[in-house]
Length: 189
Image 1 (cartoon, one colour):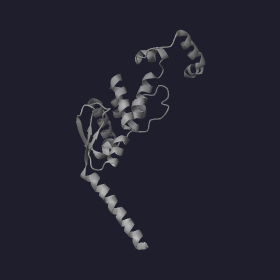
Image 2 (tube, rainbow, N blue to C red):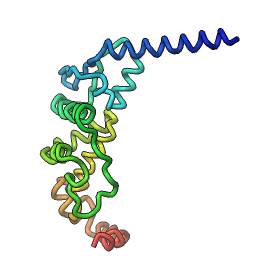
Image 3 (cartoon, rainbow, N blue to C red):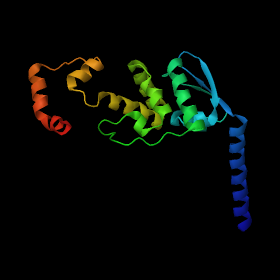
Image 4 (cartoon, one colour):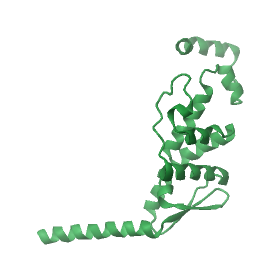
Protein backbone atom coordinates (compact mmCIF):
# COMPACT_ATOMS: atom_id res chain seq x y z
CA UNK A 1 0.00 0.00 0.00
CA UNK A 2 2.79 2.44 0.90
CA UNK A 3 4.52 1.74 -2.43
CA UNK A 4 1.35 2.76 -4.31
CA UNK A 5 1.12 5.99 -2.26
CA UNK A 6 4.81 6.74 -2.87
CA UNK A 7 4.41 6.04 -6.60
CA UNK A 8 1.42 8.41 -6.71
CA UNK A 9 3.38 11.15 -4.89
CA UNK A 10 6.33 10.66 -7.27
CA UNK A 11 4.03 10.84 -10.30
CA UNK A 12 2.44 14.03 -8.96
CA UNK A 13 5.87 15.58 -8.39
CA UNK A 14 6.93 14.66 -11.94
CA UNK A 15 3.73 16.25 -13.31
CA UNK A 16 4.38 19.41 -11.28
CA UNK A 17 7.90 19.56 -12.72
CA UNK A 18 6.52 19.18 -16.25
CA UNK A 19 4.17 22.12 -15.67
CA UNK A 20 7.04 24.20 -14.32
CA UNK A 21 9.23 23.18 -17.28
CA UNK A 22 6.42 24.20 -19.64
CA UNK A 23 6.29 27.69 -18.10
CA UNK A 24 10.07 28.02 -18.39
CA UNK A 25 10.01 26.79 -22.01
CA UNK A 26 7.33 29.30 -22.98
CA UNK A 27 8.87 32.23 -21.19
CA UNK A 28 6.99 34.63 -23.46
CA UNK A 29 3.39 34.56 -24.57
CA UNK A 30 1.74 36.48 -27.36
CA UNK A 31 -1.31 38.64 -26.71
CA UNK A 32 -3.23 39.55 -29.85
CA UNK A 33 -5.26 42.75 -29.95
CA UNK A 34 -8.60 43.41 -31.62
CA UNK A 35 -6.78 44.60 -34.76
CA UNK A 36 -4.57 41.49 -34.84
CA UNK A 37 -1.40 43.17 -33.55
CA UNK A 38 0.81 40.79 -31.55
CA UNK A 39 2.53 41.65 -28.30
CA UNK A 40 5.23 39.31 -26.93
CA UNK A 41 5.39 39.55 -23.14
CA UNK A 42 6.70 37.40 -20.27
CA UNK A 43 4.21 34.78 -19.11
CA UNK A 44 4.31 36.03 -15.52
CA UNK A 45 3.35 39.51 -16.69
CA UNK A 46 0.49 38.12 -18.80
CA UNK A 47 -0.78 36.15 -15.81
CA UNK A 48 -1.74 39.39 -14.05
CA UNK A 49 -4.82 39.06 -16.23
CA UNK A 50 -7.07 36.38 -14.76
CA UNK A 51 -8.57 35.94 -18.25
CA UNK A 52 -5.19 35.23 -19.85
CA UNK A 53 -4.12 33.09 -16.89
CA UNK A 54 -7.20 30.88 -17.29
CA UNK A 55 -6.66 30.65 -21.07
CA UNK A 56 -3.06 29.56 -20.40
CA UNK A 57 -4.25 26.91 -17.95
CA UNK A 58 -6.97 25.69 -20.34
CA UNK A 59 -4.64 25.28 -23.32
CA UNK A 60 -1.07 24.26 -22.52
CA UNK A 61 -0.23 23.87 -26.21
CA UNK A 62 -0.62 27.49 -27.26
CA UNK A 63 1.24 30.63 -26.41
CA UNK A 64 -0.99 32.99 -28.42
CA UNK A 65 -4.05 34.50 -26.79
CA UNK A 66 -6.54 36.66 -28.70
CA UNK A 67 -8.13 39.59 -26.89
CA UNK A 68 -10.85 40.67 -29.34
CA UNK A 69 -12.29 43.32 -27.00
CA UNK A 70 -9.02 45.24 -26.51
CA UNK A 71 -7.52 47.62 -29.08
CA UNK A 72 -3.79 47.75 -29.72
CA UNK A 73 -3.41 51.19 -28.16
CA UNK A 74 -5.18 50.14 -24.98
CA UNK A 75 -3.40 46.77 -24.84
CA UNK A 76 -0.06 48.60 -24.96
CA UNK A 77 -1.12 50.61 -21.90
CA UNK A 78 -2.35 47.48 -20.10
CA UNK A 79 0.97 45.74 -20.78
CA UNK A 80 2.91 48.80 -19.60
CA UNK A 81 0.98 48.71 -16.33
CA UNK A 82 1.36 44.94 -15.87
CA UNK A 83 5.11 45.02 -16.58
CA UNK A 84 5.68 47.78 -14.06
CA UNK A 85 3.47 46.12 -11.46
CA UNK A 86 5.09 42.70 -11.74
CA UNK A 87 8.69 43.63 -12.55
CA UNK A 88 9.34 46.98 -10.85
CA UNK A 89 7.02 47.85 -8.00
CA UNK A 90 3.70 46.30 -6.98
CA UNK A 91 0.99 48.88 -6.43
CA UNK A 92 -0.15 49.63 -2.89
CA UNK A 93 -3.72 48.73 -2.00
CA UNK A 94 -6.06 51.65 -2.69
CA UNK A 95 -8.26 52.47 0.29
CA UNK A 96 -12.02 52.58 -0.23
CA UNK A 97 -13.44 55.12 -0.01
CA UNK A 98 -10.61 57.43 -1.01
CA UNK A 99 -11.75 60.24 1.26
CA UNK A 100 -12.05 63.94 0.65
CA UNK A 101 -9.26 65.94 -0.97
CA UNK A 102 -7.08 62.84 -1.42
CA UNK A 103 -4.80 62.90 -4.45
CA UNK A 104 -3.84 59.67 -6.20
CA UNK A 105 -0.18 60.35 -5.39
CA UNK A 106 -1.16 60.20 -1.70
CA UNK A 107 -2.33 56.58 -1.97
CA UNK A 108 -0.14 55.06 -4.71
CA UNK A 109 3.40 55.75 -5.90
CA UNK A 110 4.07 58.59 -8.32
CA UNK A 111 4.40 56.23 -11.30
CA UNK A 112 0.91 54.79 -10.79
CA UNK A 113 -0.64 58.21 -10.15
CA UNK A 114 0.92 59.59 -13.34
CA UNK A 115 -0.03 56.49 -15.32
CA UNK A 116 -3.76 57.22 -15.12
CA UNK A 117 -3.76 60.98 -14.56
CA UNK A 118 -1.99 61.63 -17.87
CA UNK A 119 -4.71 59.82 -19.84
CA UNK A 120 -7.47 61.56 -21.72
CA UNK A 121 -10.94 60.76 -20.44
CA UNK A 122 -11.74 58.44 -23.37
CA UNK A 123 -8.47 56.55 -22.88
CA UNK A 124 -9.17 56.17 -19.17
CA UNK A 125 -12.60 54.65 -19.83
CA UNK A 126 -11.18 52.32 -22.48
CA UNK A 127 -8.57 51.25 -19.93
CA UNK A 128 -11.34 50.51 -17.41
CA UNK A 129 -13.18 48.40 -19.98
CA UNK A 130 -9.98 46.48 -20.82
CA UNK A 131 -9.09 45.93 -17.14
CA UNK A 132 -12.60 44.64 -16.54
CA UNK A 133 -12.57 42.35 -19.61
CA UNK A 134 -9.08 41.03 -18.86
CA UNK A 135 -9.86 40.78 -15.15
CA UNK A 136 -6.90 42.75 -13.82
CA UNK A 137 -8.14 43.87 -10.41
CA UNK A 138 -5.30 46.26 -9.42
CA UNK A 139 -5.54 48.13 -12.75
CA UNK A 140 -9.32 48.28 -12.46
CA UNK A 141 -9.02 49.67 -8.93
CA UNK A 142 -6.49 52.30 -10.01
CA UNK A 143 -8.49 53.46 -13.02
CA UNK A 144 -11.78 53.58 -11.11
CA UNK A 145 -10.15 55.41 -8.19
CA UNK A 146 -8.86 57.96 -10.69
CA UNK A 147 -12.42 58.53 -11.97
CA UNK A 148 -13.73 58.75 -8.40
CA UNK A 149 -11.02 61.29 -7.66
CA UNK A 150 -12.04 63.28 -10.77
CA UNK A 151 -15.69 63.59 -9.71
CA UNK A 152 -15.13 64.11 -6.00
CA UNK A 153 -16.83 67.35 -4.99
CA UNK A 154 -18.66 67.85 -8.29
CA UNK A 155 -22.36 68.52 -8.51
CA UNK A 156 -24.59 66.24 -10.57
CA UNK A 157 -24.71 68.85 -13.33
CA UNK A 158 -20.89 69.17 -13.34
CA UNK A 159 -20.55 65.39 -13.61
CA UNK A 160 -23.02 65.34 -16.50
CA UNK A 161 -21.07 68.07 -18.28
CA UNK A 162 -17.69 66.40 -17.63
CA UNK A 163 -18.81 63.02 -18.95
CA UNK A 164 -21.27 64.25 -21.60
CA UNK A 165 -24.19 62.57 -19.88
CA UNK A 166 -27.60 63.61 -21.17
CA UNK A 167 -30.18 64.36 -18.54
CA UNK A 168 -33.17 62.38 -19.73
CA UNK A 169 -35.32 63.13 -16.67
CA UNK A 170 -38.13 65.64 -16.87
CA UNK A 171 -37.83 68.53 -14.38
CA UNK A 172 -40.52 66.85 -12.25
CA UNK A 173 -38.70 63.49 -12.24
CA UNK A 174 -35.42 65.23 -11.37
CA UNK A 175 -37.05 67.05 -8.46
CA UNK A 176 -38.58 63.81 -7.20
CA UNK A 177 -35.23 61.98 -7.35
CA UNK A 178 -33.44 64.84 -5.56
CA UNK A 179 -36.13 64.82 -2.84
CA UNK A 180 -35.89 61.03 -2.39
CA UNK A 181 -32.09 61.21 -2.16
CA UNK A 182 -31.74 64.42 -0.20
CA UNK A 183 -29.76 62.49 2.43
CA UNK A 184 -26.90 61.94 -0.04
CA UNK A 185 -26.45 65.64 -0.69
CA UNK A 186 -26.65 66.44 3.03
CA UNK A 187 -23.84 63.96 3.83
CA UNK A 188 -21.54 65.41 1.18
CA UNK A 189 -21.98 68.99 2.46
